[in-house]
Amino acid sequence: MFYLGDQTLFSNLPFEVAPAQWTCLLGSSGIGKSTLLRLFAGLRTGGEFEGKITAGNGMAAQSLIAYMGQTDLLFPWLTLRGNVMLDSRLRGEAGNLERADALIEQVGLSKHTHKRMHELSGGMRQRTALARTLMENKPIVLLDEP
Image 1 (cartoon, rainbow, N blue to C red):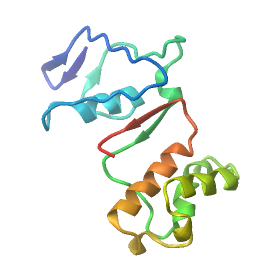
Image 2 (image 1 turned 180 degrees about the horizontal axis):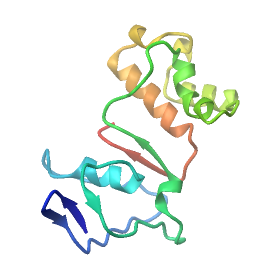
Image 3 (image 1 turned 90 degrees about the horizontal axis):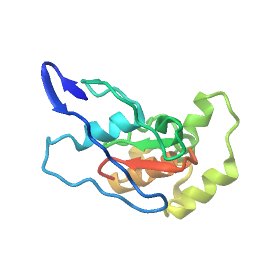
Image 4 (image 1 turned 30 degrees about the vertical axis):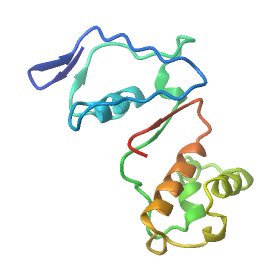
């Protein structure tokens, strides 16, 4: 069950997604698509959830998820490459520079690795955020209005 204040938004909601495919949540604005994605990712939602979200192998789904929110949340003082490698840096890990550069190339930004965020267009910033999300190398990737 998921509650927002004293209102029950859903209860007994079975939701299964087949592996190795794209799945899309569609609905009008304000219906709760972002809330569901945040709930799956184990992030704050503003509501209260009673239940379990698991992967097919029974593991907690949150440990298998990389999440990209609606806003890019990039740090303006870091370069594009620095933003892509940020999560590993925050964990105190060296990070995989080769993987970061390969992802940056895949999103078409290899000529911009040393630029700061104010030097990038909105679309370039979104692709930087996508590369940072994919850098997590998780089997489940949740993209909120990419």
